[in-house]
Image (cartoon, rainbow, N blue to C red; front, side, top):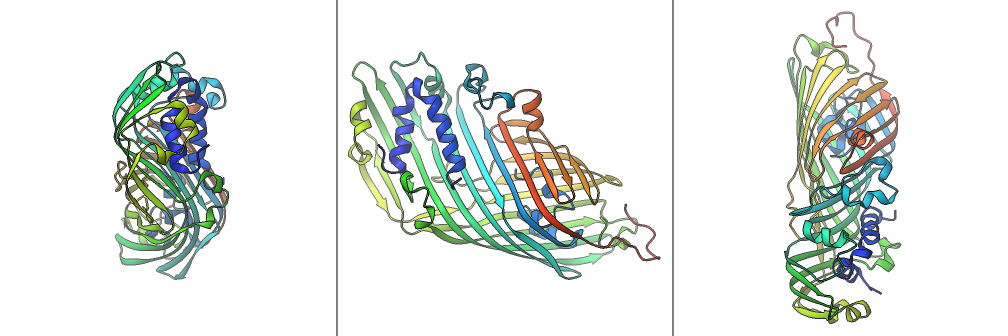
Length: 462
């Protein structure tokens, strides 16, 4: 039985190469990545003018001059899974067809899996003056991924008849799982208001509480299995880091990391046709351009381990299953501290008011973290175009997006007063095949700005 995370992950990557075990173990590993915290984000809603405090996650500037006097988030969540190897329909998620060879789409080259959980807990924003707003947020996040795993290896794993000799060469894959909590404070203000030109800025500072981290990074790893001798011959090296064993995962607060992070953002609005005379409760722009850098910073686990091993060895299957990882490979270096960077990202957004209550939103999210770094903690790059109908009590979203690994996706979202629910991929899954699945939801208490206009304010939008 493996005693810690690096034993377990190595077991996954070598012993579980047996084809008749891989399907169950791959499912288990995906569940571990998504649930190890005990148990594009928020497509559509995050760029709605009625997103309120939820907008702080993509651009902290957006909370000032909002359509709310106060907005209180009770609970919101976003769950994402995307991959480059399997495609499936929603009705196949919980049956054996999910692992059918007919569902494989990328059978060679580099393959990756990415999953994310993002929960915004009790949080609120309110205006302290006409042109200044503050917010306080609580948040729990988890990101897990398998990156750059060779498709030929996956094919040999997934083929029930391929139980003979096999060989994989020059593997540089990485596997990582990170989870943490955040306490955030945001300040945003109007920088200038020049009738047709309007600019605001915001900054968020975060205290980070690391819950768990674990990773394996392969460097030029080669694995050969000889069925006759029942042996594995491996070369290359492995870097392994972890904070807790699988047995201790239910008590993640025994060994936590700490750190600080932040976001910064700017939003420009073009307000022609005397729209600037509208009330605080009304949208005023013809188009809006936002720019932000999110998740700057890192956290450090002081009581952790990072070990680098030379993987040049020949091991029998029985030896590996009944032994300890440290006995098979030579440890070449070790340290007792793990630093985890946040998934830093560059975000740009353009929102165009087509007509009255109809809008078209263009959004890009680009990771500034290399996914090949050891213990890389990154977002999946995406580009989206989202037409929406938006009013005070109702918004409808139709996101069209291209997401790294899973490709083109189509979804649907709905906001009705204090409730919202949506998905960036549900249409693909219902009408055909998809390589991604996601859902977002939320419940809040909105307190709107007054929409009553002065008698001299006749030319207004909406």
